[in-house]
Length: 256
Image (cartoon, rainbow, N blue to C red; front, side):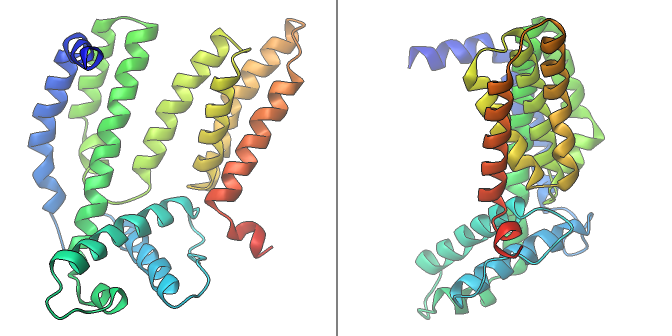
């Protein structure tokens, strides 16, 4: 309990800024429906609903949407299932089955819950970025850079629409943070494991995210130049990345 209080005291200003701007941005989640600001929204949510429908029918859970990876679609399916389950428990006077109920729910409900998730994930990304700047630079840079992010048009758009881009923001911030941590101490296996998890899941979100391997390889080759060979570390990070990619996007291998 004391640690939580201390955390709030130490980071009170950025938490206050985040709360105030969140209250201002939150109503934008309900904006523009049914005319979508981004056409990726119906693609994501409909693909998630298709996965759920296949689950009801005992069919393949392959999203069959090949412009992105499967990971964000499965997350959307999970979020959609929460909406269906809530309606099944509390708003189901006719005792419909889960499958039947899923067709009777207003489509806007699925959009709202996915947008709320984007909102939470974007704010979490800002907090990570703040912590990164505070740890590696100073408190002024941390607060000012976080404030710039929060008032930017990009934050406003990505935090109030259900697309996969908020995942890319989170992965980018995490890659920056752990690249610094690995560079400072290459021998800590925990940081390599987390980096590998992020890399694998990010590629299963959007394919060009394989470029997130570049910071790690840059650090790795800089260590080789200094006569410090870490081939075991390289094997660990690629094995974990491949495993996480396979778990987040299994039908790449099943349908191969």
